[in-house]
Image: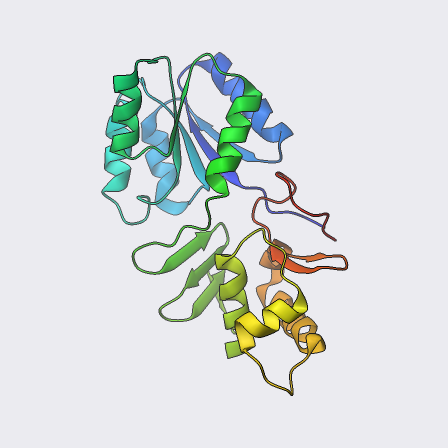
Length: 239
């Protein structure tokens, strides 16, 4: 099964560290987008929404702190998780970074293993919902207010039940739900519904989602899960 890789935006001006980050992220099934300064990163963020940003404190044209402040002023980017990378190990600098809006703070030098663990921990905190009730997951965008779903900027038509099922799975990622649990959580009790109803609705939802259907995984003998992170982390084997 093809898995959508979580996109990690890396802004780091030291070439050696960028290379280390690139191969560490690729090895863990992330998709790294790497820049050495903030200007191209700003351009990238105009049309893309990475799952997380790795940000150096000291950059050529702007500090990482200033970059975070600008991101937090924009509705589209204010909720993207950020991990700062810096040689500034003093507690006062760590506090400043976290108070500005960073989700975590790693001092240089760091081990790739520690970094990957920190990334996974931040990503597991859940799907980000904007103040306008928008969920942006790569090619899949969901407007919870309008109950409108687009894939690759194309509006797709969902039945009310399919939308409720998608909303539930997206807002409860990585946990595996049995068919019975989905019946209770999404439809409530109706004697005309059974576990086959869940399978049929999953099939309709996947067909409608097209290329984004790979995010909904079948876990053998257990049920279904919404898995943005794909194969990383401690998740059951999916088919």
